[in-house]
Length: 114
Image 1 (cartoon, rainbow, N blue to C red):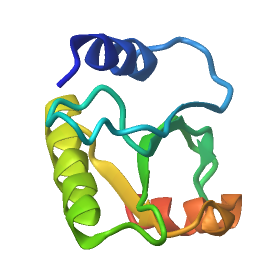
Image 2 (cartoon, rainbow, N blue to C red):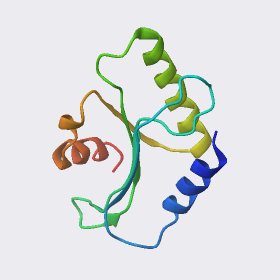
Image 3 (cartoon, helix red, strand yellow):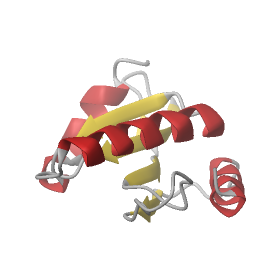
Image 4 (cartoon, one colour):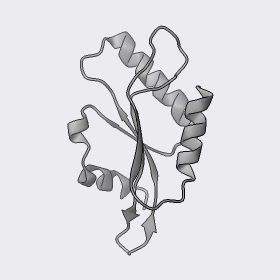
């Protein structure tokens, strides 16, 4: 894992702000197996539970590119798994198109975690 990316994710996880914020990375260097960046969104979301509690889950949203060759799809999936493990991310979701990413979609996924 790229140490700079890992440090950025660590700082993002422990940020003090209460607004919604995201880190978006959209490039994977296929010439090497080192992840400098990957197609993902790390999203800190202000989530208001049904009982009124507020939490700020760090969501990892992986957008698998449409139309990729199978070997690229496998590389993206492997990169995602390594990053999720290294950054200790627990709320991991996958979409096929950024058009699918709506607030309602995210709320439905987060409701599972209560």
